[in-house]
Structures are given as structure tokens and as C-alpha cells.
Amino acid sequence: MTDQTAQAPVAASQGLQSLVDDWSTDQETFKQVHWGKAMMWIFLLSDTFIFSCFLTSYMTVRSSTTIPWPNPSEVFALTIAGQHIPLILIAIMTFILISSSGTMALAVNYGYRRDRRTTALLMFATALFGVTFVSMQGFEWTKLILEGVRPWQNPWGAPQFGSCFFMITGFHGLHVSIGVIYLTTIAIKVLKGDFERKGNYEVVEIAGLYWHFVDLVWVFIFAFFYLW
Amino acid sequence: MAHESVEAEHALAPAGDHNAAHGQQHPLGIYFAIWGLLFVLSTFSYLVDYFHFVGFTRWTLILAFMWLKAGLIVAVFMHMRWERLALIYAILIPPLLLGVLVALMSIEADYTFWTRVIFFGLIKGTPGPG
Image (cartoon, rainbow over all chains, first blue to last red; front, side):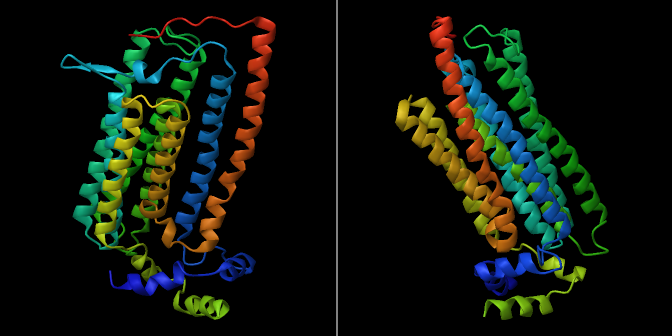
């Protein structure tokens, strides 16, 4: 904690000159950045482009169709205890994913404190939130498929709704599922003390980057697909 | 000045792994604060739908809450605000190019839409659920 003040001037208050310096040295560009972290960021950048392609295609088909788009607010409504609540399932899923991001951020912090037990527990909690999220997505998919939504048709309007829905949420769900496996693996390794030898807990932060990215993508899907 | 600090920190930071243990370490409070803020912003996003805001108000609110949430996640949870400028620029500048793709596809979608309207006529939609 004490080194935060020492670290701040190095990382935060550097000018454009240091940017040029970093990029023009014939050494590593991302100085003081763990190579795995730089690689994860670059992977996430490429993933950003993939998700952007999906969302842009969705924008294109939605704004070029002459048939009205199904109203997501109604499509994803649930009747709970006799109350008809619009979009409630998606709202709950959003809160679950945010909570998982919260526990993951704490896990990274405890990792650097070398508190292995707490780190692993928080990572397992994160993975559990992830499993809950995917299960709710499974419920959502089942409900929509039973109601007759297919990639090429649906009972409510523009047929492209189905293909966009399955591609975008499916690809995101796949990311969550992979993240659950990834986090569980790292958590077990933390618990076993595999990172003690090198004292290198950046591995937890790198796994965290992936998980926060999954949450980040959901922010955009929630805004563009479910709310728009 | 900037040059000196870069050399100074380079001297401080050999490639040794012992340095890695002091990576991104910040007070826990900030994570709880951001966690809470994300909950509040998500609630606001949901309320935009719940209270049936439409048109320009709806889009503005959705986009505002979306960017705020995305910014908080990237800046604090992903520690971007504490990273070096070289990494920040390398990661955050390229996605701006997507604006070109979105703009092009938006023009294309508009063209397709009017082509359909003019040559195929407007097709009446089926009523929504509920």
C-alpha cells in the first residue's frame, strides 16, 4: 500500500515525451509491464474488434430492415409472482456480472498481498457468479427457442433478430464459460502455491483483465442489444 | 526532465521478478466504490427502459451510462489509469478506428433501407408479444 505514492509519479504523470521514448527505444516498448499482461491486453484488443464486428453487423441489419424490430423490453420480460416486469432477467444478469467483476478486482489485490486463501476464495466466487450468469443465459435461450425464435425467424418482427441474438449473446456466453475454466485453473494453482516460488502474482491480474473484459463487453451488449 | 525520470526508473526496474510482486496494488476502498458506482449506473440504465424514455433522451442516457460504466471498468478494475502511457495509447487508440467502420456501415444500412422501401415497398410488421 505504501508504494502507491511512490508508484504514482512514475506511471500516471508522465508526458508525451516518455511515450515517444518508450516507443523509440530498441528494447521492450512496454517497460515495467509484465509480458503476459501486455500480451493479454493485445489479445483483448483483437477481441474488441471481433465483438465490434458483431455489434456493427447488428446495427447494419437493424437499421436496414423495413420490418419492425422486436421490442427487447417485452421479449425479455418475465412474470414473477404475478408481476409483469420488463427486461428483469437481463438486469439481474447485469448485476451478477458486475458483482463477479468486483470480487475479481479484490482477488487481484489479495494476490499481490500474497494472501493465497482469500485470493483463491474470491476467484472461486467470481467463477461461481460466472456459472450463474451462463445458467441464466441458458434459461433465456431455452425460453426464446421454445417461443419460436430461430436465427432466421421469430414471431415478433424482423427475422434478423434471432441471428443477432444468438451470435452476440452466444459468443459472449462462450467467453464467460472459458473465463470460468480459466479462473478456476488459476485459483487452484494459487491455492497450491504454484506462484510462491517466483512470487509472481501478476498471473492473477492477467486473468482478472480477461474477466473484466467479459464484463466490459456485456456493458456494450446490454446498452445496444437489450436497451436500444 | 522526462528523459531523466525514464532513465531513473529504468535503473530502478531491472527485469527481476521481485519487482513484479509490487505491481498494481491500491487501497481496497476504491474497488468497493467503483463496484457501488457500477451498480448505481446499471440501475439507471435499467430505469431508462423501465420508465419508457424514447427517442433522443433514451439514446443519450443509454450511451452516457454505457460509456461511464465502460470507463470505470477499464480505468480502475483493469488498472489502465495506473499503466504507462505507452500501453494506454497502444490499447485505447486502435479501437477508435471502429468509428470508421460504424460510419461506413451506417451509410450502407441507410442505402439498403431506402432501396428496400423504394423497390420492394414497406412491409407491415407482425405485432409484438404481450
